[in-house]
Amino acid sequence: MAPAVNDTSRLALEVHRILAAELLETLTDWGWEGVRASHAAVFTTIDRRSGSRLTELARRAHITKQGMMLLVDELQERGYVRRVPDPEDARAKIVRLTARGRRYATDVRRAVAAIESRMRRDLGHRGYAAMREGLEALVDNDEGDSRGT
Image 1 (tube, rainbow, N blue to C red):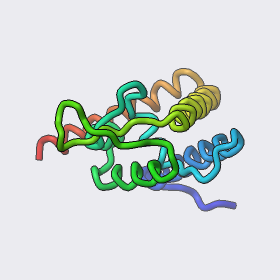
Image 2: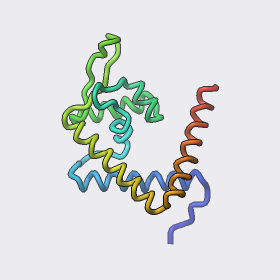
Image 3: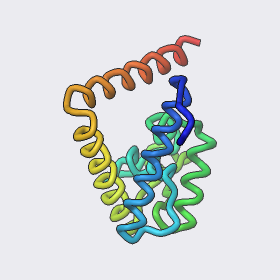
């Protein structure tokens, strides 16, 4: 019998682990090998048409610029994204999806939607809505605290 998860942070980490494993299993079943759940931070936040700056991807994904840079480097090596000059700022680069990356992004979004659909079934509409509202409030409060310092 598994030990009880008794505090909120451990419970949140366990839910994250379960959801990440489900995402990876789904993507692997669909033929995407060698991907990690953390890659979803790029594919769920990038502007699919025009691409996005690295700093914007990091902000949207709520991770550091350095963390996002490591993800983008890895995905570029695997042929999912490419960096191109930003037409508005010669010093900056835009991260754009390759054709392979666009196919993968579509499957990531489909897999995430399927996971959320399963959670809605498991929790019921009200439970799912309450969970989302609570999580969004915690994230919004943290962002407000971060901006205030």
